[in-house]
Image 1: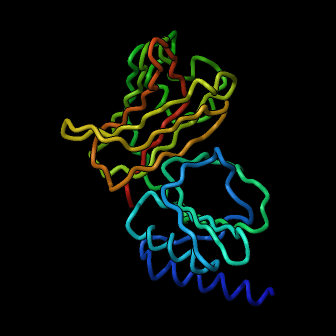
Image 2: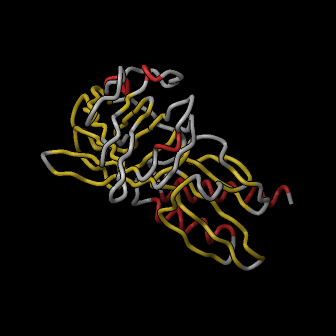
Image 3: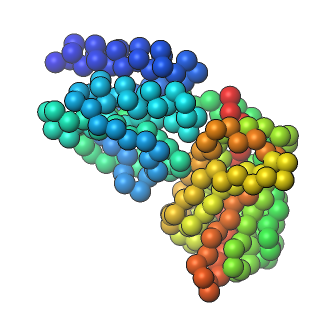
Length: 248
C-alpha cells in the first residue's frame, strides 16, 4: 500500500508539472479544509484519485487563483476535487478526514507593493497609513486602520507602481471585534476602471489572516477594501495590515 501511494503521488506531481509549468504544488496535509476556510473556484468528480486530480489541475493551468487542490474519496468509485480559491483563511483551518488530501502551491511571496493607505473616515488616532506600516500584530486601537461607523466604509491602498495584482493579504485586529470584517469586496482600480477581485462574506475572527486572489491578472495601481453594509445599517472597517503582491 505504501509503494502504491508513493507511486500515485509521484504521478500526480508529474501531471502537475506538465499542466502547470509555472506552478509547483506540494502535499500540504492529509485531511480537508474546513467549510468556512476558503471559497472554491472549481470542482469536479472522477472515478479515481488521479482522474479527479487531473480535472482540477487542467483547470488550474488557466486560472491564477488556483493555489491549491483538495481531493476527497467519497466512495470507492467516486472522488471529488476542489480548486482553491477566491479567498482563503491562512492558518490551520482543517478538518480530519482520512479520505482527503490537499496539495498547495509553493508560496511565491515577492515584494509587498502596498505603499499608502487612505480611509473613507477616521476613528480616533487610527489613520489609513497604519494599514501599510509593516506591523501585522495590532493589540491596541491606535495601531489599527479604523473608520467611523458609516454606510459603506472603505480603505484604499495605493501601490508602488501599476501591476497585475495577484493576491492581497489582510491581517485582522488581534484584541477584539474581529467579526466586524464581513461582506468585504476587494477591488483593483487601474486607468479609472474598477475590477472586482474577490468577495468575502465572513465574518472573520479576531486575529485572522485572510488571503484574497484576483482572477486574470487584473492590472491596477489601487486596491480598495469595502464593507458592503446592508440597507439601513452602518459598519466599522477596522483592520491591522494589508499586503499586496503582483503576479509572478
